[in-house]
Amino acid sequence: MKIGFMELVVIFIVALVVIGPDKLPEFAKKLGSGLRAFREATNDLTSEIRENVVEPLEEAQAPIREAIEPLEEMDREIKGSVKEVQTSLNNIGKPKKKPAAEKTQQAPAAEAPETPATETAASEPVQAQEAEVPQAPASNEPETTQAVSPAAEDATQNQNKGGETT
View 1 (tube, rainbow, N blue to C red):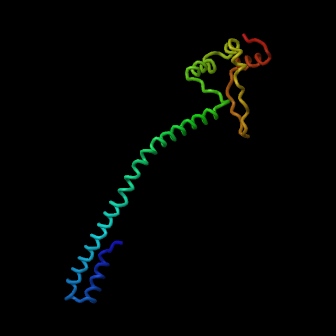
View 2: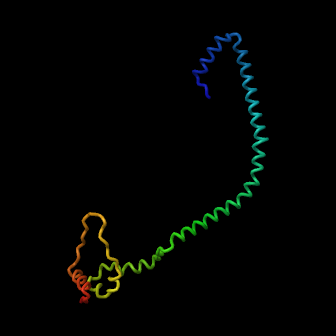
View 3: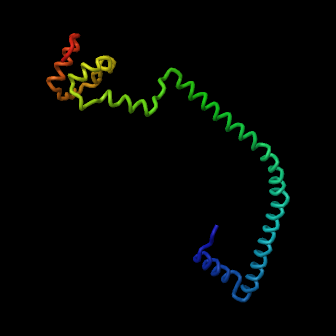
């Protein structure tokens, strides 16, 4: 609790009226010495508590902390192992991720935008059959259409009929 300037003025005026101007300096000296004695007593009490209670507790805690450190390290290792096992169990049955090298090798064969559609259909019929067919969107929004060259359309129709394209 802090006392502001206005509170001090009010206390001084009340003390001046109650005690009187003659005895006020003597009373202030007694009040100051009493506050000083109170502060010294509290400092002594605080230092005694620190010496007799806090420091022995800290000394007693030191060996306990040293004994707990290996247990905490073991706990961290066990939790890490459990997390690894959980991750591997969660990944059971999921396809493994392909290395980046395999992805880059497969990407040109799948895309091949420079090659004409008739040549692609004739030279790589197996890949065309393995390619996934895009499914219709689940929403009611209209599908976006892409422009298909007539040669590619003829190659697709011939391939669906089982004929070869030239």
